Length: 158
Image (cartoon, rainbow, N blue to C red):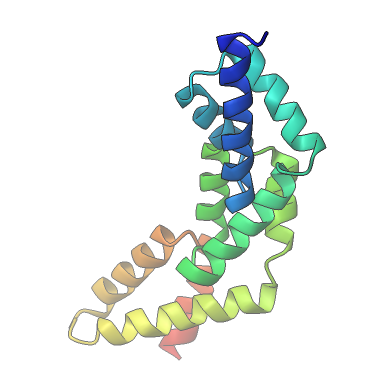
């Protein structure tokens, strides 16, 4: 005879597999979801191990997909991607691996396009120094590195 606890665990296992199959998830997202389903910490860790063994959960795969998506779709810089991955408790190894998947030429081209678009939006600004500061702040907020932004500001001046 199965107990209520076993039934709850089996039901959670089915739900969490669907949750992971729908899209890539971080280990922390899965832990949080299991907690919301009323699963104990020990059972959650056991289920997490099972998900990893069965290929439903892979932190490296998640990090690579997350970084690529944020870069391509939201045009985030590497600094912002790193911060978001750290918030999701992704290991430094996986973060490094995910950033290696971003093509450097595409990265610089994205920075250039964002800078040119924003520079054009700021054409009503009379003060060049204010215009540059606004552009710099925008690109920093998008997560690009300061040295690349500085180089871009120099390029736009020419």
